[in-house]
Image (cartoon, rainbow, N blue to C red; front, top):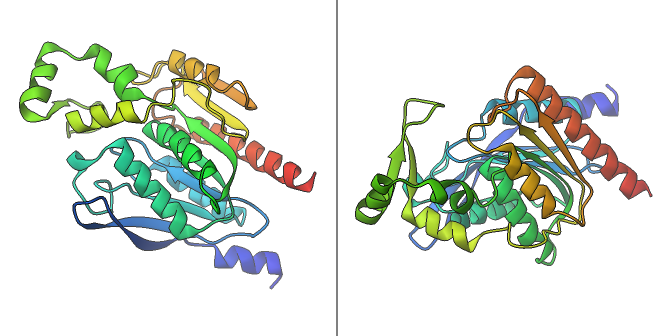
Length: 278
């Protein structure tokens, strides 16, 4: 068996593992799936969206792509999501960012390409800020943002709060609204909104220091495509590509959307390879 075939065989499956974090109210386990890969390529790191988990169709497609191409990949569930411990209602941007950074530290890659969906795009941008300021952190070689929702709490939710929702936040600490993606209502807490203001990124120039590819649906009911244009205006120092999908929705999970995501990722990997070779 050739070395290439052996590496492919070794990378047939991602392994479920856990790390632990304490947000000040007791230890919680973060569930992760880690796939080993080649040392000459960056690890792919998946950041899920609000209320989503690491077993969604986009994450699974990325993991399959990683396996086919001998790439390392990390995906994980924020606390209160999927297979991780904790209550969803306790979650905030700061807590979920800490989860993401703990998962990356556990995997200990030297280089990464981060792929973030919806809220995961916001957390990805915050993670880049934190990693760039930390000695010994992995180098970020690319960002792929799918329907990114940076600052969505203050930019997209708070401006449209109804009187009833404001009353629920004041009296109960949260409000719920019917979701178009499932039978369970989507919950937004006062703590999430408050903490969101402390993690805003659309307040000045965002310097990622790496190529960025944004894919945004023009028919997205949750994150208007103009929000992606606004994000792009805050990335003047980076090499940014924006792909607007004329009939794309928020999930971007159709076969053609998955193919578009993988093509964009392939481009980022090629750029990363050329940069190292040069």
